[in-house]
Length: 439
Image (tube, rainbow, N blue to C red; front, side, top):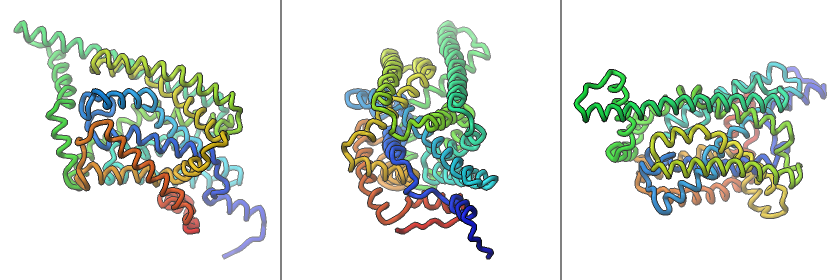
């Protein structure tokens, strides 16, 4: 093999390998650790209960501590953890491409980038179909990451305007669905009147009635019981049972939600990174204003949505209406969370917790997959079969236990290894280079 003593060539070659621990940005790792823990707060309902991620009346309890749990998670965390996850993914992809570009990687930068996303698609499919998590997000992020490539070099203000445009398109689409739902409810009411009067239903009213019956059937006690039973069966039965749900999220969701939800936050992530928001070097006042304005708008919007749902007894139409202002609540809340996390990284307190959160963040992919493995064993028939057997608030005992486990395990693992197992494998496949694993 031809070798070279050219320093420039050696530097370029070194740059075409994964980023080292010394090159990492600590505040971003701490933030990623926070978000990784936070995402389980929302995902746990999908792991352990049927149909009650948004609607607590379906299963898991909707009174007392169960209701307070639903209120808290929807006021503070709903949509924001996914938003921050998306934002950090945008930051990570930009850092990788920027590093490669500055090292004159040329077309090799795109080669590494798209190979990285290709393998992420594979991980996502395995995660969803074989590890039995229908709420998995890796597949969606990989698809959106491919679109993100063309936006990376735009000015921060331009990125923000494009993100706002995407948010508006998503909100308008949701509004049109709300108007359709209003008509559906009205048609169902007319159909009931016609039936009571002995009148024949029109074709349109029959279609509306059939659709409404399917909606009501999905949250019926019978549907809950059947779903609970299926989720407690063996592994291969579960793979077959959940495959249609994974197929829906990997197809319809990509254009209905991901473009206006995930990609928009990735764009904001790159813009915020270019504005140096994630370094922790802005003033306390700056981050404090992020918290103040973010929470003022976000909590007000979320309070409106939560009270509207409760006052209307969690009706179908109330959920449809609340979805219109969804981004107006979650995006400002996410900005507030960023400000609060950055203040935490700057304060000279709880250094031990910061290091543990950073370790969780460095192993975010491994820890994210670990959530699914642990919950598969706890909730499905593969393990203890507790699906549907716990109340909503009881699910969070499991969340806290997983948090403690990962906060202990992650720094111990990184004492002996350079990367988490999934992070090492991803780098190995993406860069076609074998990075060191053991220290």
